[in-house]
Image 1 (cartoon, rainbow, N blue to C red):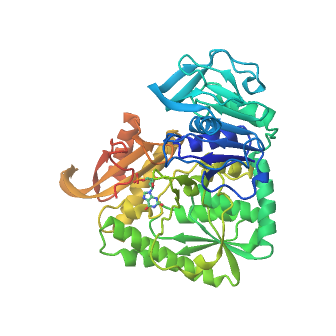
Image 2: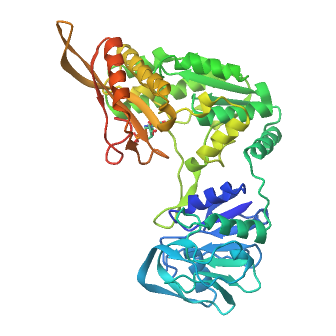
Length: 506
Ligand code: XMP
């Protein structure tokens, strides 16, 4: 197990990724929340930081329980911190050192094993280490940075000025491997299969013979969480899958069927009418979200009460949802996503929470799902917002609008699958616009609705670019929609990126 101490660098999550890619497990903690039991960790990595070590409000944690006792790798700010507090001298560099550089004069230390002379590394810092502490040994330099890599003599403590975690440091993974495997002696045994095995055992121990409730959404995270729990406790897991009336066409039936096929103990609850009644006449996007969130909690709470003596509530929370990061002001801030964030705690929230995926990144969740034999049709699904078509029908929602949009969306999504485009797109869907326009069908004038199609590329939804779908595909899809969906006479394609637009229109 590797501990990554976060000093607020934009690259901290990337360090965790690179370590995990070596099949070694790692955890990020904010620098001011050192874990009490450090014996759990076989290596510690210090991240970079936007701060200067010379500034009063910069992170200055006490590392006396770590340095010299556990193998320590200090990156960028971390390296400057090591130097500064051990008798070295850190000062502003004459030029901002940013971008490509090349390692020279490599010393034969095992830390640099298999790293080539001239290897490209990536720098991003404005302070520089002018002189090393007396007990430090210089291991390598670059053209502009003399003290680029060093070691504290007699300790497994290393400092590097560049960022091994970024793609542009060509041999960064090798360097991390040298440190973690050769120096710290960690095993590369953190695989999806191993994760499933240990997690299932932990869940068994933790839950015993208790009952657990889990809300399935049809999405990847809740489905994989359910499978893990199912492996651990079988039918003590009670899944609830709510139809809010705003799902894709046939989604409720298809997904429910799939879940049953996977052996899950799942109850499908069709609450469409309850949601649509509560939404009637409301056209404000945020109010629509609140109503959907509130009704979901009511329905879920009612259903949870039907399961007697349930002690646990399981959630599909994943790592990026809950990483404690260091905010710009220096204080640690917990980021917890809550799509159903409304006032008043319902009863099921008073249950104990179990989150089997809380340490995984999204692609790891998919790999874990695959290692349990889950179908690609579930693991490869595009993200879909909790409020569903409710925020893709602009303005107020009626059952008629829902069924029009379901038809349009189904033609678009099925088309993407048929044309082999579905897996190339991060997320896609259709929006029903509150606009009517004049058209002509046969000899008749029409005055009907307009829909827009949206397909984006993204990695996390934070930024996104529209996808350059083939004209032939758009042409065919537009024809199919207008010919087959009554009430629609115009189709447009959204060519805005995020920012400044967002993925959803509401
Ligand atoms: P935006 O529209 O903010 O969307 O660019 C970014 C990602 O978040 C999804 N999204 C939501 N998901 N509840 C959700 O569960 C919501 O209220 C919500 N709004 C947006 C959106 O589909 C995209 O993946």
